[in-house]
Length: 425
Image 1 (spheres, rainbow, N blue to C red):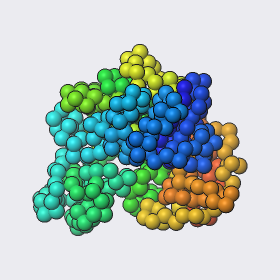
Image 2 (image 1 turned 180 degrees about the vertical axis):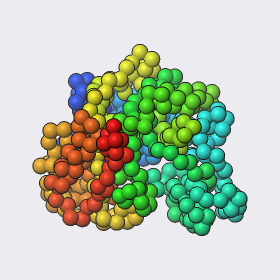
Image 3 (image 1 turned 45 degrees about the vertical axis):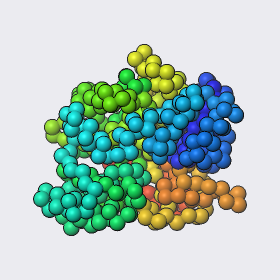
Image 4 (image 1 turned 90 degrees about the vertical axis):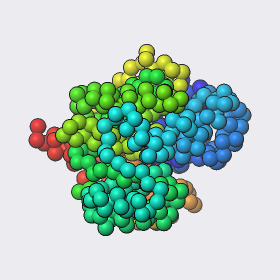
């Protein structure tokens, strides 16, 4: 098969690495990719937001499958435009991608189909939103309705903080994404990420993980796109997975089909495991980043076979096998992230850091004058496997410490909840 992978981050490097191992693969192209992806695929200078250009490339290169990494093109309808030209694509339609593209849409779907989630209000004017905050009180959660690269969420511990977050949304800090906001009840519990491979009818569980959103050790500081993750997530017991499928995933699949937008692709449920069971925080309609990195480390089966089964509506006849090992990834970020990251600093020692049970996935990197340099906020994902999360953690940090990048930083406590569980058991 000739495959085109769209995207340029750590998630896409992990996907390229796994697709590249498939015996089904003839040629892998990636657009625009990054230096790490370039080791797995032929990089193509293609604007992935120009759907006509992507379609033309697929025709020229006889592409058998397009795999869409990031959410932006999906919400913009790239899957529809490719399917209209009879090009096979892994990823949801524009209508189905609303599950990520509009938090308000998802909350309304939850209300309609009795899917457990936080109580909420939707607002498109500042005064009404502030009145709701004043009436409800803090702690409370403020979310920009649209896509904001993982940064449009504020967990406000005081009413003043909530009002400031609302000001930021309506003053344009998140562009069009903040023109409408969702204000949510603050939920307590343990967060987890749950993935399902979907073909429009069948949803097949595709692993669990736990992300670390806040920038600093001990879960302090602003939210980021994710500073690290591990898989599996111990909080996702067989009972919690069964309830998540029955109470959250299956009603969502049924509801989307009834709305004329059956969901096919990866459905990524961000969950809060409360004392009353799992509740939906939000949906993403693509692989998580950095969760994808740990899932690909653990996946035993051929990813390309599974993606084809999803595209062809064959998941009812498919099973997925996982390695027994745990996996953990640590994000190395550029100084200034999640604000304005400093670009251009030289990174050395990446190839020497990789080894047995360790993969270094590139996210925001570039080549400048023959040197590897930082070219984004989240720059490298140091990913390791181990018999336990604790073992994977040790291996990941040992590899990370072999990388010479004075201008980079990371959290030193990725996996702390799982490691604490392991020590207590």
